Length: 313
Image (cartoon, rainbow, N blue to C red):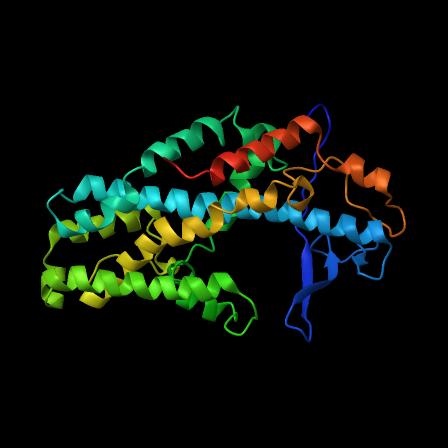
């Protein structure tokens, strides 16, 4: 409930079509997962406001998925796992510490602020987002089940999702280049210190670092593919590349441009205060405006995205 009004969030299905000029365009939207008489499939050929309202519900759901799964869980909370294990197990003179500390130095501070201002009992997400406090943790728990090692490594993630040939996919194009650059850098640094697999296996501090990540960060779930130990130099280099990529390029990709797009509230409404249409032809401009969040909710969402997008000094 926001402003004494019930809020709504859908789990929509969207069908995209690649046009002859290489644009991906939505051609069908179903706002609930299961087909039903009160769950119509909306098309661009429907009335202007039917189609527009369907897209608004999709973008509102995308806001929740992006902020809680893609942004909070897959960058901030993961970076905290890596950082805490680093501080607990690896001395400052260790080459791994020197390699990773520039990327994790302020992780605990920014996550403390997130817990204090965004996801706390009185935080922005709890008070103003459609998911609310209880729903927020439901989304995070479900998202955790898809948090596999391969999904954190962009070359494998792109291949597994079948996105190698999607046109104009700049996240893929730039991300793969950045991954390769980071991997070469990691190879150069760690390759200097670890000349053989045996040296990796005998480094107790290194092994304790990955063990704590597996046990405490991924709850010992071997099905996720996270290494429980490092047996080879190549395994170590790949994992460290993933850590640096997650804390740098991946976070920048999902965080830094948020306000450029989300500063226009209808693009990604933080919440919606009317239920989705159950029949076609019932949506109007007035209904759409009543569905969009109130001014105070809008201000909270826009200001939060502005703050998140702002580069630190």
